Image 1 (cartoon, each protein chain N blue to C red):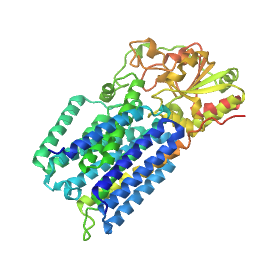
Image 2 (tube, chains in turn red, brown):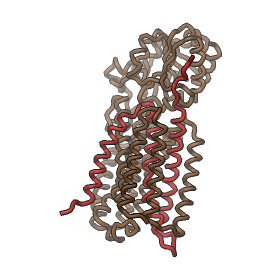
Image 3 (cartoon, chains in turn purple, orange):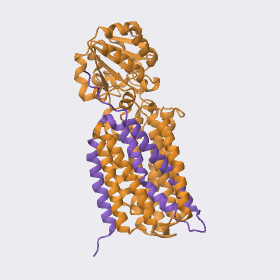
Image 4 (tube, rainbow over the protein chains, first blue to last red):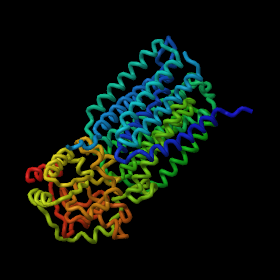
Length: 102
Length: 465
């Protein structure tokens, strides 16, 4: 009997929780704010679902109820992706080491 | 059009890049590279999605238009937002992730064929369960984050909103969500789906209103975690590895941050979630309300004390963020350093309104990050320092947390500011902090209170140095 693909996805999920656990504990506390903004940006990878929904209409009618929700979700996720990565970049650029003084 | 297997490999790749993005944050040097990995992962995920659908007809143009519209709004916000407003921004972004998850779930529910999940009214059971969980968690994230945003922005009062029967009501709603998901899966009724969304929005709202302003670091971290679980739920529905990996990463990241924040306040997670801190506790504080002598001084006195010190430790708090005093503070420190005074910064885990809030503000003011220390790293140094300069912090320095078991903040780790030879306390008035308790430090022999706006006082001190 074949294993249900759900089990594979569940394995990936559980293992990723552990990866996340160890990776996040090693994040230095001074970078916790950038951590939040970058996790924000990457969780917006949900845009892939929104794109599928947005492209679900056919050539005759691009817009149906489902694709409209898709388009809205695309816009929301895009705000997050661009905003999240850029604000993280902006913050990280500010973290500087002490200038070596003479 | 690329094969499903190939696109799955690419989704896995983008998941790995997201892991590397978080890994980079282990030190400021590698963090910028990490962020680039994150961006790369996102580009791969989006490109692969386009290629796997292979539909470049008229719909495609609209997708691009919406991406560009959202993207430019996001970019505009990212460049304009002042660093002091980061907590609000993050709360706002969380709400968008939540709402996006809800919209994707709605789209999938209305048109399951497009997602390969069956046909309307006959959606695969597993997908329907995943979808409804994703939608419910997404809705909770959305309405919860909106409340958090309003509270942080000051549009809504930061004080807890409590009413009778709050907890039983919440419990009933949570149970009914589970029952609804069960009924939805057995009947496939779209009405139940809408009701589920409605009460999920409601519970998100009800869960956050009783939580006070000072507990916002926990709330934001918790909502961060929720947004991750919502994404993972949708990831299962779409059978998309990138989403599942990311959801798990973000979910555990937020959970760890909430844990760190709770530990910083010595409170259990449930204690925070049940809310009402600072509004109901009127123990011990009232009894000590009678007038006690306080020494207050002006910028001149403060400058004199600091000039004669050889080491100064600065303790910033939320008040510094409110007064936007970080730049003025850096200028003061520059002047001190010119006089060969050793200066370091001490950051309490829950200082500010979100994890790492103070560190970002200091970084913005060009304070090198190797002068900034965490509580455990610096707490022993207070005994050897001459001056502690407390700017906008209060509860995190209160020695009562170590001495009075009656106090609501007893057991919370605090900065040992009172061990310094002298303490300068910049504050607008003697009013207690968010925990609503008096700070003994104000009445100590070696404390000098500086009653003024944090920014103005810091500037005045610099002039007098």
